[in-house]
Image (cartoon, rainbow, N blue to C red; front, side, top):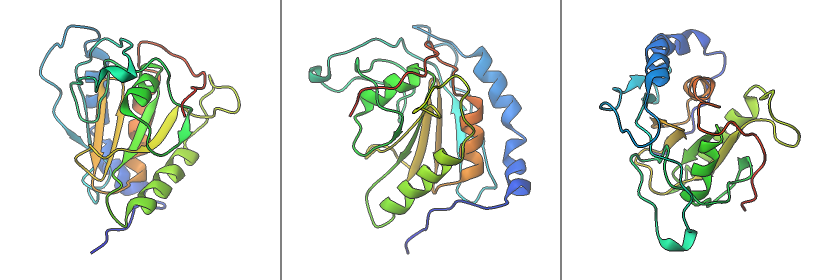
Length: 206
């Protein structure tokens, strides 16, 4: 049975159930390592949202953000989806695109951005994309950005994620079985601008 994208309306009460654990995750984020030191074992998964999509997130160790040649092969990352490490020299235009290589949007993470990702492997593909775009469009404007950029978010499909929906920030990952707006908003609120380069300039890919 096709599972529709889930974008709850007026779901604040249910969202608080998962958000109660966010201070723990945020505290771990402040203490997370940066650079070559992989540090401690990744923080355990923390459930977000009301549980309907199985949304969860965790902070993870980071690798240095070094530039690599796009023609030199696929970079090696610590997590799936990638959340730090080697990336291509050109970062992605903020917004929604299809088929963005991981090496490009990982560069956006280094600039303090968040990637909202969906698996495009069936009839749910367009619904997932539309729901994630709606989540992006509803996020509060980043005061450090200048038009035409409003928020530091990239929405794109990713065939290698292990859940239908995922997200990544520098040193943090998120996964869910469907699009859950409250938990995605919580993830975005916690992790944008927590990266080596706090930069809202627009990219050049595609």
